[in-house]
Image (cartoon, rainbow, N blue to C red; front, side):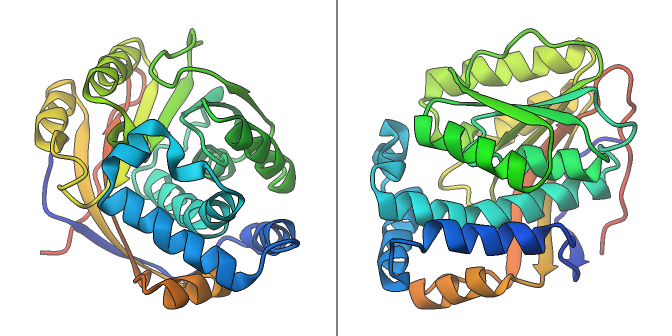
Length: 274
C-alpha cells in the first residue's frame, strides 16, 4: 500500500558499470580549463545557495558562472544519477519500460538518463529553462548512450503525454516559486490520473521543502507513495575529492521521493528496516 512511512535504508554498493566512462568524460570535459580548486570554491558557493540563499536558486543564478556549472555537473549530477537509478530499481518503476521519459527541469539530464538505463533503454525528453543545461543534457545522453533530446522550456508546463509515458521531476519543485510549484504539482498529479508514471525527488531537508507534508498527503490520497531514503553508496573518486575539499558529506545519500504509478501500473511495496 502507498504510504509516507519511515526512512528506507538500503546499500548501494556497486556503481553501474556505465557510469565509469561517463564520469571520466565529465572530468575531462569540465576540468579541461578549470583548476580543481576553482571548482571546489564554486561548489561551496553552490551548496551555500541551495541551503541558505534560496532567493538565488529561485532566480536561477546557481548556474551563472563557468565554475558553478562545472561544479554542478561534476558533483551533483552523479549523485542525482545514483539516487534516481536506485529509486526506480527499488520501487520497480522501471518495468515495464516506459514508452518515453519526460525529465522536467532536466539539468544535465542525469536523472532521466538514469531511469532510461534502469528500464533498458527508454527514450528521454529533457526540458529545462537554462540553455547550458539543455546543451549538457544532450552531451549526457550521447555519452551514456541514451536515446534522448533536450529543449528549452517552462518546467511548470508539461508537454502532451502519450500512453505509457513516465515523468520525473528531480530536485526541481524546491527551486520554484510557490505559485509555479503548485501549478507543476497539480499537473503531475493530473498526469498520473491519465496513466503516466510520476516520480519526484527532493532533498531531505525540510527547510528547503516546507510544503512537503501537504504535497505528500496529496500524492498518497491520489494513490501514490511518499518515502524517505538513506542509501549508503560507493562514492565516485572525483565526487569524493570534491566533497572532502568543500567540506560536504556524501557517504550516504539522503533524499525524499514521491511516486504515483498511474492507472496502468499498480504501486509496488518495498521492505523497510524497523
